[in-house]
Amino acid sequence: MADTEPALCRSCGHDGLQTFLSLGKTPLADALVTEEQLTEEEAVFPLDVAFCPECALVQILGDVPPEMLFVDNYLYFSSFSDHLLAHSRDHALGLIERLDLGPDSLVVEIASNDGYLLRNFVEHGIPVLGIEPAPDQADAAETAGIPTRREFFGIELARELVESGQKADVIIANNVMAHVPDLNGFVAGMAHLLEDDGVITVENPSVDELVERCAFDTIYHEHHCYFSCLSVSALAARHGLSLNRVDSFPDLHGGTLRWSLGKKHEPHVSVARHVDAETEAGVGGYAYYEHFADEVNRVERDLRALLEGLKADGATIAAYGAAAKGATLVNVVGIGTDLVDFVVDRNTHKQGRYMPGTHLPIRPVEALLEEQPDYVLLLAWNFAEEIRNQQAEYERRGGRFIVPVPTPEVLS
Ligand code: JHZ
Image: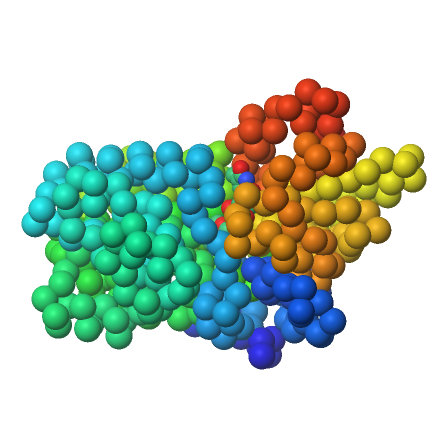
């Protein structure tokens, strides 16, 4: 069970966390419900978000057992977005060239999912190791020829790998550092596994983008932490790692940063540029987060009013993307089948199931053209461009997309 008793900062251990948002109790975002489970009671857990005034880390309070999140209930396959695949390929090719990787190198990816990224290294004859505890994703990766350890990563696994003679020239941790309850064990593990001249790259949506875009739906139990350059550099330094470079991808997952860490202190100009911008914006102080709850209330209220208004006018509404963030959105705003008829998703593992909590049925994407609902709420708003391109026919026939954040609106 999640525990919301007074908590210590997940990074620095400070005991004065300042809570600035409570989203109530929600079901686990990726725990999509099967037909048989529809009548069973779903577990719900509190979703409270706090700021650490000591190291600037934003984090949720309480933990859900990782097996419940990533083994029993995890249907996220990275390969369902063309945009993410292209981004990952660019990343891999850039690393191969910049670090001159070859057959004697080792690239380790933590949370390697279905092998969406490591396959680019394999194609170039570069040895890889994927680490992925989610069973179906690990199966898919192995089928694609990616050697995969089916475990959670931490200092113990890092020690075991090093003892067996494996040290990494590159460690990639995309959208996983936020997912670990033992943050320090995770970063200590990466530092231990890394060659002295190796590079770690960590990607995650950044907390300032979350606040600026009012992306409260990206808050769910899988995401323990919401990082900034300030909090990442403090965390890295604690484990002898230097923040050496920051790259920004505003169009990925609602605004992603890639932090490059290494054992040598050799910061690129991008580090000071980002740290200065965060400092100026106030990301390192509580005041920056103080009004976020009001903004969330505004989006909740306006989105409900928009959907209810459309329904009152006789419109039909569906949704696109059975995303984890979609689960937070529909549960926090209270969007059930009274407002939205169904959700579509390309991920075949999700089709035939139901959104947790509000039980919207999940159908294949083709249902949009079959049913031609008047409006489609973009739960996967982070892929708006990719989805609109793919659904040009739906819009051509008069259908309209709605984005929920930062301001609920019908796209023209
Ligand atoms: P998507 C995931 O969150 C999971 P989610 C994870 N917890 C994380 O940290 C973040 O990413 C960063 C579907 N889709 O990727 C696929 C289509 O159907 O925004 C997905 O089910 N057609 C690791 O789950 C969903 O939408 C498409 O064309 O919030 C998108 O989910 C595309 C592009 C996607 O992440």
